[in-house]
Length: 140
Image 1: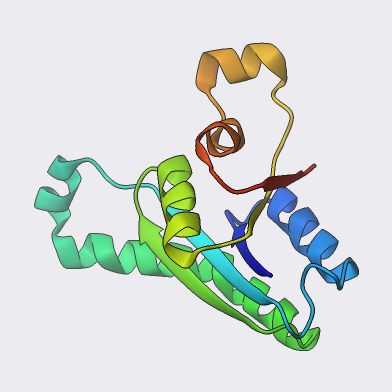
Image 2: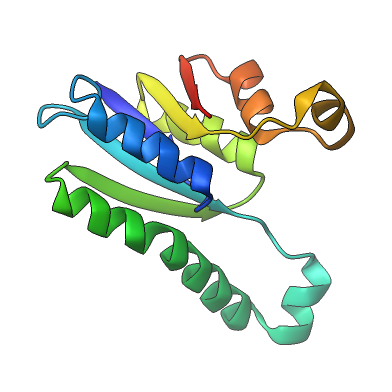
């Protein structure tokens, strides 16, 4: 099975990762795990003011902050994986990555904003569930 783990570095990502590790039928030696991080883009004016290379370096540093601890954890548990990161709208990028990767499942952590919170500010997890053609496992 090919799983796309959407990782934002939150404690909910850690819970989703722990869930995968404790369920060998999902993240076993014969399975493929793609750890995917999305960095939010800066407004165009920021890129113009500080320069594209500074913005790119910032995104790389932020992605490493999320992905490096996950890499160490997965190596310690001997789980085969690869990491990827992009800059863009989180929900759209996760759904797009799942399609490109031909993932069988998306796994992601979520936090409960409740109905009002989802209505007011939106939820990446809710958008992924709505827009994805593959099953989405949300770990709370």
